[in-house]
Amino acid sequence: MKYSFLPNTSIKISKICLGTMTWGKQNTESEGHEQMDFAYNKGVNFFDTAELYPVPAEAETYGETERIIGTWFKKTGLRDKIILASKIAGPGAYTKHIRSTGFSKNALIEALDQSLKRLQTDYIDLYQLHWPERYTNTFGIRGFKPSSSEKWVDNFNEILFVLDQLIKSGKIRHVGLSNENPWGVMRFLEESKKNLPRMITIQNSYSLLNRQFEVGNAEISVRENIGLLAYSPLACGVLSGKYIKGIDNPSSRLNLFKRFIRYSSNQSTEATKRYLKLAENNNLTLTQMALAFVNQQPFVTSNIIGATNLIQLKENIDSINIELNDEVLYGIEKIHQEIPDPST
Image 1 (cartoon, one colour):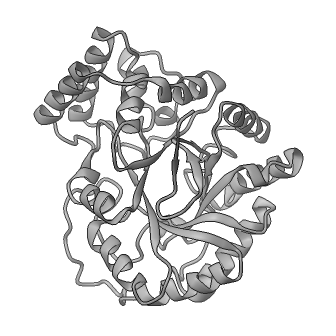
Image 2 (spheres, one colour):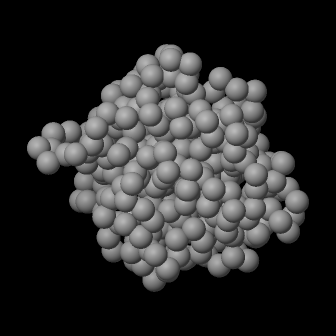
């Protein structure tokens, strides 16, 4: 395993982070425990979760993923060996079963306390805002269009003030963002200069099919030292190649949940075919190439991988040992120029 540091800290984390959002829906509790056992034994010490998980979010399964992690901590006694990240859900139509108060003081306190209880821990190493409260372009929406009906009022300072109190209480060590855009990142960083906590990471989608992070956030990441925690590096499994090769099965994610169409466009399919050919021409699987590409980016602090079985998990984790050569990287850039960011 390779390691990096959470930016502006002395906390060492694995460059491969174990994603958990399938536990409690696609995976059972015992399967989640098996994945944590396997990942830990392979040197992975960084786990990422959220109160929202598992996904798709439903009232019946709310918080189940955190609960599964909590029972693993209790069973193994390994809480102090794991750097744990979680998130508070933002407002939205699909989170009404959680709360509708965004990142208000009461919401932050309630969400954190409930997560700590489910996780059977006294603290979370990295606590993240899952997506912005304000209306902006996230989750595959390419351009920003102002909304005349928006009711959001600027509250960056208020959020950081509450998070500061939670850090001082010992319940949180550090804070981060997720699904955030350059304007929001810089506003939080500017407000932190008022003796408030500094956001140290940003968890956004990043893969061969979605490199939008590079447009504005990558420069911020490098110059301001706010590390990317890249999620969906395999584009919901599309970049495993299983769908275009016809080796998927009924339990594959995009077959189970038809609403996840972000990576299913004709452009995404064509780009995936080209990336698959490039990988195979260089004696790589598409999974290996896709994950190694993310691992090698200078702004990536950790790559959040996810799997539903141990075979997938092993290949994903082992991608840390692959270094893409100049020929492969040139081929990737050529395809990217021809079909840029097809999933957005």
